[in-house]
Image (tube, rainbow over the protein chains, first blue to last red):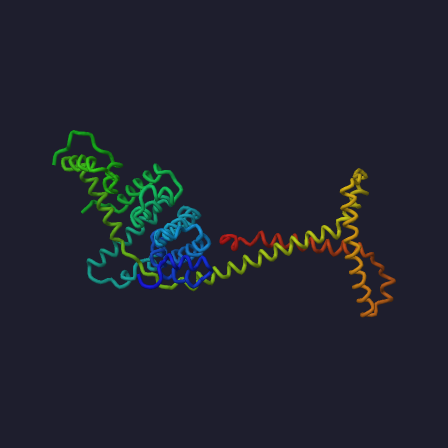
Length: 183
Length: 197
């Protein structure tokens, strides 16, 4: 990694150097945005949640263990920020926008196989977003952040048995919605 | 492929297999079962297909740099926090001052009202202290008033509107209390700020 390490930037931020935190934001904003985008399904909302994530993380930076990597920590904060936001939605309030939220490739369809791949990607994202909040969170943490069951339990503050049941049900629902046949 | 007559492992076991939570013996046992059980093999394949779908989801590029907005918001929040701390400290100081200044008036009013309060040594000492403090403040205010009257040549008005210093102090104290209540209501409504406290 070029430039100062995350650890050094965190330590400088703690000493009052806000520019160091700006560098941390620049370095981690894309992965954080993708966490938010997978959970929220809408670009504008995902950008807002990404900003909220970094603002909240700044306030809690004293609780971060500098001996551990910053990336996984900030992505877990993003998951919780989004989860709290999703819980405030009324059922049916959230809808994916047709054009705005689709990958840019969709607007300029190329060869047939690319079109099919993009269509499938949209279907997967939509299926995730349609899951109940906790199911969405466990899918995100297990499949995209590659956390263990114990780490998911700690991040979401729920028992391990709930992690398993949420995860298995979420996968079952996703497989049904996507009509996955394993081919 | 013929169905195995042995008991099916159950869906949870398939999830644990794909999550690599089974030990080698359990893995071999499940693999042996799925190799001879079409139903479980199909279910495992279905779940495995879902894993592939999820892992192949592409990353979306962020189109704007968030660092500037984040830093501006953090700095704005810090300024607000400092402002609120100063306001709270100021209000507490004023509240204490007002209590000291108009304390004797309230005390004597309550005493007259109830007729039950018998001054103890401590309360008498407190009241004497209050009165002493009030007198010093009162003298200052009286001096200011006389200076203003002379400066503005309101001598004739002074005779017409003879205001007691204690009344003036009570009036000022009352206005300050109203101001404090108003400010506390304003602070309570600053929900946006509370989000980041």
